[in-house]
Length: 479
Image (cartoon, one colour):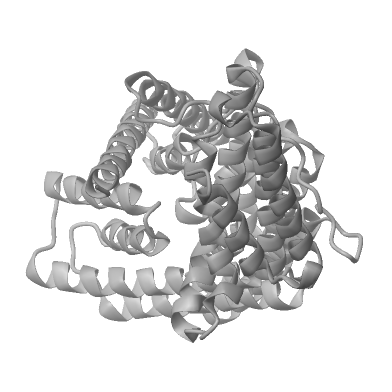
């Protein structure tokens, strides 16, 4: 019974990857053609392709205004990123300060609503792309032509990525746009009074600053690998456990990719058209498997970078070994920052998101007797909260497999599983559950579960896991 949904999800992933790859190839070919006309190096084309990967994964809101504003932001930040890239080579210290400041700002802006949160994400993308492919075009026309090529790369990436998202939505392989405004999450501030997003911004700044120091000192020619890894691990890390988990995945994927690159180039090193096909093939595979496990993406990108770094020749194993050392150093910088700079406990994040999911479920139950449209809105909010909760599930589920506690119901991973299982009950709520007494019983059980979460399992003598199991038992009585 489960094979069909799984195969459908796999088909969706591969279809999304194919459309994203089309945007990447279209961006690369277009910008590379412009570079040829200008007699410039193709570096802006690689920059544009990397931007297209990031932009194609974003689901922008804001309507027509955002459609015209976003390209201007992308063009401006691509230009600023190019300036930071130039500064990193001309004055590494000042460049590192500018890069770290830009990344801090991109995270800090999340404190100020959706428009600035989107702007912050658009600021980060060109800066990251510069680490992978510095946009040195060296056009005969001089710096002004180089600047124009960088701006063109950003704009092309945006429009092709937008076209890819629209195409995906039209053929039904992208999730539909969120049709509700999710209510604000409670508990956004920690006990210290500092918003969690500000803590994450400070962690990012410390991780990047440390990675620059380590990279400049230990890997002077390839410091970018260390900084890029520190950014990847810090970016979106939801607590200490999540940062450690992402660091392990990044390192494990890089090791697998290094081994695969060594084996591949020992047997066959692609050149010319075969090399381009291999690069785009590995990129497609990484895009398709990225949501399954980040390690697949890390492995595929290691393969791609190995081919790009040594076009038409063999891969130096010592070079790949140095890459692993740099990745390990960058991951260590990010994990240390997450653990020691205003640390956020993973279980605290889970408690907050679990409480939000239960609140949304309570709203759904309370409105089970109203119009179908309102029920659909409440169900959409609940699904959104469950998605947010499952974003932090991977590290704690991995931890549960490792520690193998005897009392599994006390583990946060079990709480997430129990909350996710509420989905099947949520889909059943409608006019046939309009019995006020039944809904009141469910809501009281939800209140007990939320109380257990808020009081760390001491509410009414019930641990969180037991309270959630009682809620399930009540729901099953009318199953």
